[in-house]
Image (cartoon, rainbow, N blue to C red; front, top):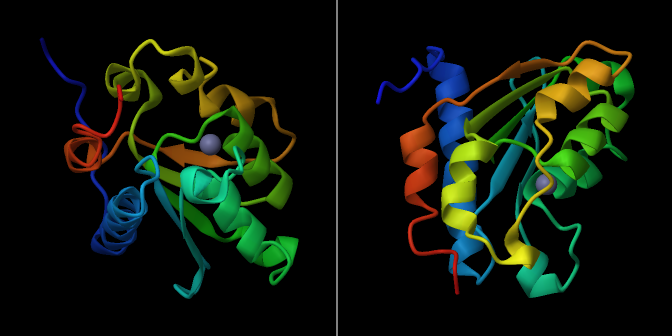
Length: 166
Ligand SMILES: [Zn+2]
């Protein structure tokens, strides 16, 4: 089996993606599924950080990326968000890809991809995702959204070991 070569990230992107992965571990430590996200402005300022909080809040829309968009969107205009990057520990789901689109965020970098993540999710219906790539959502959007991933997929995947199929 030959894994596809991952894109090579610069130090700044790598640092922010590692922060998103750390947030995924933090979310897991609070009893949630392990997902984390960070939104970073074009000038490097961190605009929002979030972890998946669906278990602790009971809100099924509390995914890390959507939560981060909810935090950043009221505070920052579309021009700023167009120059921002959302880093996610995992490939955004359909809902989160939609939230990223509606926020007008211009760039996404993610860790583990949705296909590999399904190995951890298992077959239970409430743990399965809609099998539409975030790239298909972004490609259908009328704005340009650059999408980079999977990157650091092994690091992002490690947090999912033992976190599913319960
Ligand atoms: Zn999501």
